[in-house]
Length: 388
Image (cartoon, rainbow, N blue to C red; front, side):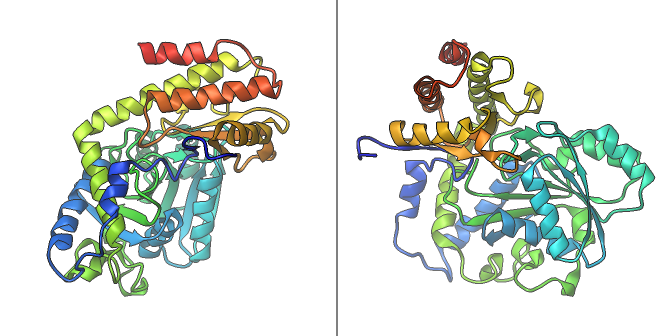
């Protein structure tokens, strides 16, 4: 399309990068051996832990979410260990695939499309099955936009007498949905910088508590993935297994400053408000299930991304129209039997009311232009949420 105004990326990551973050990265290469960079990283780690709600360790890797998966597994999983995956979408299954590649014996509990993990089923399964080394679950699965409450899973594990590590993927939720690692009883948390933390892709994080540290594989883990020197380095370069990802770190510093200036509670509240506006529009447009969020219950919907079932090939048609005619890029459908019937709306990180309402208006225009059956009043419903 012609270059007439800014395009808008409304996919569930990478999210919109604030100008302040980009300006922080627009600098000459810093000294990696001493000085400001060292002091900045020393402050960065406790602030990352603050966002994750933990008093424990964090290791930073140059990589994406898949790197965080592999790092988390490499430090605690030995070949032959049994791992249980609580899968609510494609990304939960993907983490299980990564576990299998490091030699784990992987079992899945797959929950219906659009449904969160059922803690009762987990407890029943754990009572009937032998011990697992780890249980993997996504707080938010980016493919389905299902949100699972983590504390009830820990309660189910405790009730069943499970000694497994509880490992949680927060890639699509950290800095968007309320999460407090220590409060919910997670032992390991994986995340990345390119969604709620508003930094270009390139940094992966693994947070780990004392139970995970006690399960460390020691010298069996490779030098690069070993989280011990990264969390407790003797010299600076050990923070990153080599040269620091300098400009990403400065961008992340700016993003964390923005989060704390707004206040973490208000960041969560803002995401909750904007997601309710998205849901209100979709629910008004839905007629008999023909155009709807894939997650039926609001309590189980993510505050960062909403997956929409549009029917037939309407998801793909709508995405193409909205991108080509209005300059808004929506996320593709992932993990469904008919991915062309779905699309995803990212509303995470550096986002506000006018951005969300603009996306919804463009979707509304696409529904009309493509003659996709839908109800009326979607934008009015979204505006009513904002007006509150």
